Amino acid sequence: MFISIFGAMESGIIYAIMALGVYLTFRILDFPDLTVEGSFVTGAAVAASSIVNGIPPITATILAAFAGFIAGCLTGVLHTKGKINPLLAGILMMTALYSINLRIMGQPTISLLQETTLFNQLGSLWSATGIDAFLNNILSTIGLEQLPTTWAILLVMIVITIIIKLLTDYFLKTEVGLALRAIGDNKKMVRSLSANTDLLIIFGVGISNALVATAGGLIGQLGGFADANMGLGLIVIGLASIIIGEALFSTKTIAKATLAVILGAIIYRIIVTLALRIDFMETGDMKMITAIIVIAALVIPRVLQARKENRRRQQKRAQLDQQLRGSSDA
Image (cartoon, rainbow, N blue to C red):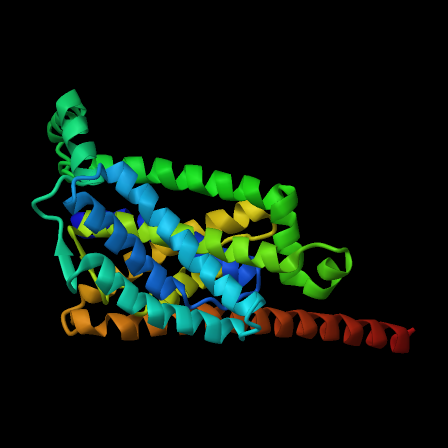
């Protein structure tokens, strides 16, 4: 059980980067962008192809982010300059990226099991320090289960995700970030102030897909492969992470909202992992589990809010009845 939850947290913290990208388009820009299902694979394809061709993993990950940025910018151009509906623009770009990703990889799947990835390097570096052996000895002494061999990867990914979160928070408080938030609230008002809304939308969608592609590159290296179909249903995962985070945690400020998205992504992965441990559940049921999680995250808070509102009305009615009785007795 511990190992399963640990693995869920490990992948969840990487998917949190993807969820932050989805948050930028769906919540900040109010732009329903389906490009992410293609740009996620693009990130994995570029990273895997680069590593196979001898490029250092860190450079390959940066190239993956840049490729995602370009894909997002193209979606923004289709919408702003081509006057195409944002949903349709995302679908068109996602469709085009499927073929582009196959071109990048040269085949449907690229294996990284025999290659040196970013996580291989981190694991080797951590083992060389002897810290993992030291901690495992302590855990063995007090009778606890030893840490998984990849715990250092989780630690490093937490640090990386927190850095990306802080950079996102800072970006959304800059002049450009505030303009993007304003566009999501009232595009016409921002345009009336002579702001170049088209350029801002293109840039915002590009940044969003850069984060998604970064997550794709990292997931590809973590799993040891890049596949042309690994982005299927990704938009639902991103939305599920956002919805769960917003349902469980406060989102009154940008900092709290981005933290809620990260925690939502981790919780989502843990829920899916625990659900798949049920005897009658199979791996193929993952899409159904995701749908159930999203439905629950959407419906339960509303039901609880409705009950709370009904309880408040009943209390108010009871107080009013008591006041009326007191005035009639007088």
